[in-house]
Image 1 (cartoon, helix red, strand yellow):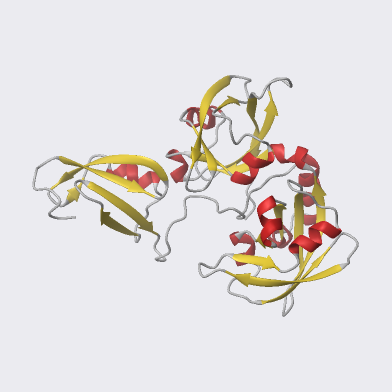
Image 2: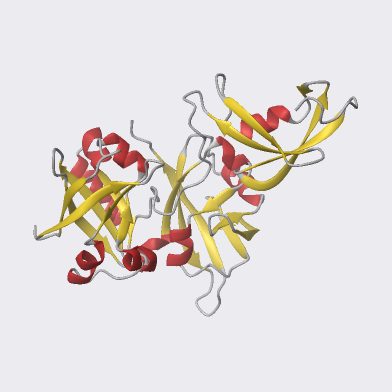
Amino acid sequence: MGGATNEDNAVVKLKSNASDITWQVKIEGRRLTEGWQTFAICHDLRVGGIVVFRHDGGLLFHVTCFGPSCCEIQYDDDDDDVIQISSDSEKNQNTAEAGGSSSDHHSCFVACVTELNLRKDILFLPRGFSRSNGLMDRKCEIILLNKDGTPWTLILSHKPDGEVYIRSGWTSFCFENRLRVNDVLTLKLVQTGTTPVLQLCSSSTTSQCRFLTLTLRPYNLIQLCLPRKFVKANGIEKARKITLLDQYDVKRTTILKPNGKRANMSLGKEWREFCYVNGVNVGESFKLELIKEKEDTATHLLKFCSKVVNFP
């Protein structure tokens, strides 16, 4: 960065993969001063982390942030990473199955049937689920059972970046079990070892996709994105405004902005006050419900339901 400018108290512009925001930070000699602390907090930078600056001309730099483990910090959910879409009935069922056991809690995940994963005959598994159950970096057969225990043999594989997926049979499984686009499934790992076994525990129609659980991360201070699956399942791809309804029934209208990089939707700045009023702090999870304000209009409310306890 040295040499970009010799002026005292110059202002550099920083961009990152976290959002489309351009951050303005003062530079004094070789030191970043005013504005850098906010940038660091919002990008979840910690002691021992690595920051790479790419000079894009003038006083503009693109910043890539790595954690202490030298892995690039991920600021957004990938297409088929964990997106916790659930109904109260599914929540009760999962709680009953888990019986308070953290091992059972980590053996289940929620997936959504989409046009894309049916067309490509592939389903990505959540990173946290794959990591917790030793499925990372594996290439082998995997058995997928329906509710009756009928097996389908698929292939478990992974991308170069470590993202795990199942293929060669997912479309057939959905067709044979009458699973349609926007259906939400709960899958449970019932056997590990040489040939892992996943079983379908429950499925629900698109009407249950109105519930969404999110965890507030430091980088969400920049922007909060609604996952693409949630947006598509509820038909709000073309909406440009949405009303936030807090626990005190106070409404706040905010914008919905398309995020071209991930094809999801970003909420406007009003959501920060929304989280504050509802007592949601960084690191805490909360449940939202999307409902129509009026049946004869396309206006939607995003209602705060409750905070969610994160199991260890």
